[in-house]
Image (cartoon, rainbow, N blue to C red; front, top):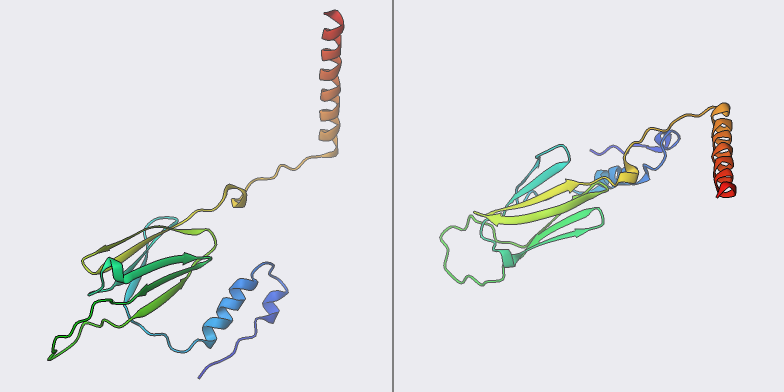
Amino acid sequence: MRTAFDFSPLYRSSIGFDRVFDMLENASRMPGADNWPPYDIAKSGEDAYRITMAVAGFGQEDLSVVHERNILVVSGERTGEDNGEYLHRGIAGRPFERRFELADHVKVTGASLVNGLLTIDLQREIPEEMKPRRIEIGSGQAGSRIETRTAVVADKQAAKKQAA
């Protein structure tokens, strides 16, 4: 049973979070997701993350990792034909596509395939202009001091020019 949440009261007190509310609404509408291939998401540092996917039977040429705007798409499709007669087939080789929503300013820094595990390293890099900064608070007198100091410096420079 699904319950639809009404996010409209949150719009009154939040600015710029439209994308978050859209993601929450889309997540509530999505049908049950396929859990294959299995994966882990780990935080490996303050702003570093790692996704590890178990992709046994897939080679580097069978896998694709694409970083689009705020989305990481990992897909795989085996290209080789295997015509053997199986008594039991437990290693899944079906094509897959797994999508991960990424926060703003998260970049993929590398990917590797070792022993059937695909590891994707991610780093959040916040631009300098987006980082918090302290704003100095001035008073009405501070502005007049600056003007006075500027006028004094200008008078001194004018006096040097006349003396020369």
